[in-house]
Image (cartoon, rainbow, N blue to C red):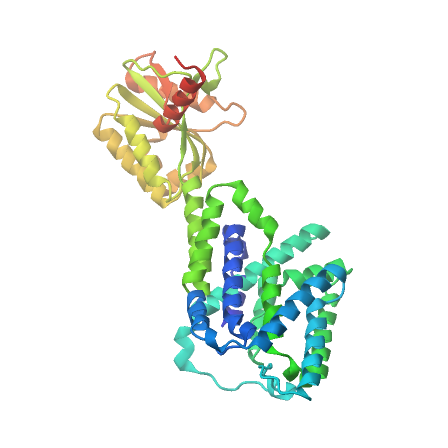
Length: 482
């Protein structure tokens, strides 16, 4: 199911949507995953019998309920493995500490067990032939329980592979094809499912080591896989001598090493929203099943994203002595009045109501007769925003106001034409942007405004968001106290 989800995503080319999942979400998920892995391995670390669960707090309580069963021989093996890993990583960094320690400790415990009885748990293994047997059964009863986990695994595996791939591509200067990566992961997971394999993903550790040691083509990855197969078939009979305490220690260490401290430092010092997303993802991963953390973290991240882009900016302008539009320093209106609302930002469904509310606030001025919507820097209009503008036109007419649009580019024109807004507004009240003369459309809109007012002169002001104006006044008061 995970493989098919990835294939469907690659077919519809949705790999680019993963860019909306921030590094804060991934870092928070990774920390929560490390915490869950550690909690599930506590029983093996202390040599006690405790069931592994999918929730961090449940695993902790399970371990605490069996603390009286601590096996001090297992604790000693845990301490020796931890000390040995740290020492080897510092003194002999090029030697694979994990493999070397497991082999050495397994040999020592096997020799000691020949003389004395060691009450410790060993790794349970199966023969290579039984693992290669394809499964022919399918359980339809559990089919409805799988989609949520399968979507989470597909999503996370591609995110991890994408991050690793983009980082290595940036280092080598090559182009990263996200959809091809998603397709490859899908094929891989479908193939693994027939042989009871774990879901496949990318690996920052293995890939980085591969590149650091000089790998330049995909052949290096193929050789790495072949070496794993050779080691598996040659060493499988010895796996049953690996103490679970040593294996659990290596598992926890490798998981903790994957936490990138540099990423955490950047997240906590860059913006206010990123730490909230990180902490929220971690808390969710500790309280609920781990797959819920990625959904919650992505949801929080998207909420902050929409909050940032979902508020159109309204800045007050006027024509200066050189005939150019410039920011207005102070606002004074007399009757009759023309307000030029300079709209900047994304006008999609997330900002439609905010835009409508701000524009209605302009229309509430009893001295105001004409509102010119200067939309040169407005983008991504959708149906929701089109209906909001339609409501604004209706509101303006009910209050004896006129709406004129200036500086519109092709996207704005297409939206107005296809939605019927152009007909409702009137073609005479719609002025396209002229790139060679940015203020020409606004001047033409002003002529149209004067025509609607029935006079040649009018006081011209461009509306500013009151919240921004209050902040500006507050800043000026602080700079020039009375």
